[in-house]
Image (cartoon, rainbow, N blue to C red; front, side, top):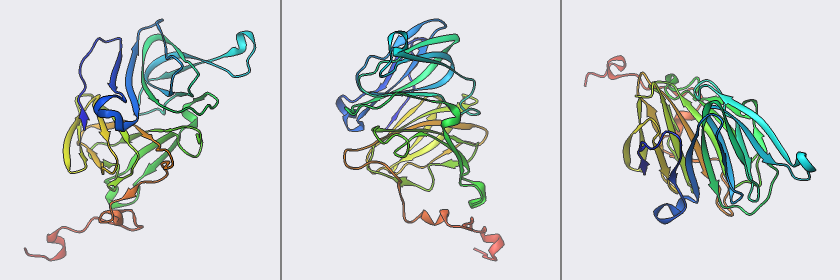
Length: 279
C-alpha cells in the first residue's frame, strides 16, 4: 500500500499511519513533525518512540533516570543539512519517558515513530557517527544495485526495543531493497528525492507503484519489496521494521529465484549480439 503525500499546513504534526482501523496490522504509528524556529513540541510519555531528524536543527531534551534536580534531564543539539550526505541524529525513548523538541533558527523536521512496548530501557541519542553505514551491492551486477544502507539501531544494539530503524540512499538509476526479499515483520518506507521532483518505482508484492517525494509505503507480512530510483534522481528512504512478539527481525528471506545475484562474481548476462545469438 502506498500513501501519497498530502499537502498540509507547513508547520504541523502530520499523522501518516496509526495502529487503528485498516492499518492495525502494521503495529506502529508514523508521522512527520515540522516546527518553526523557537517553537517546541512534547511527545507525551506513552509508547516506545523514536525521533529522527530529517532537516534543520533542534535542541532535544529528555529525562535521565536517577538524576537529581536539574540533572533529571539531559539535552543535546542536533543539526542536519542533507539526508543524502549526512547520517541522522535519532532520539530513542521507552514508554514512560517524554521528549521535548525545541526548533533551532532554521526550524526542524522530524520523522516520529511509535509502537507499543512495555519494556523500559535507558533513553539514547544516536549521533551520526553511531550509525552503521555500509555500501551494499558494490562489485556485483555492474553496480546496478549499489546503495548506502545506514542502520541506526536493531537487535544488536537495542535488544529491548520493538523497533528497527535505518535509512537507504540509492543513486540515480540504481536498485535497492535488492535482491527481492520479504519477512513476517511489518515495515514502512518514507521517501525523499533529489531533486524533489524525482520519482522511483517499487513492487509491493505483485503490485507496481510510482513513488514520489514524501510518499510512504506500507509493507505487510510476507510482501516482497524491491525498488529503483529513476535515472537523474537520487532516492533516500527511511525504513522502520516492527519486531513481532517471539519473532524478532534479524535477516530477510530472499526470493530464491533471484538470490544468485548476491553470489561472488555474479554478472549481468551478455546481450544476444555478444553471445552470437542471431535471434
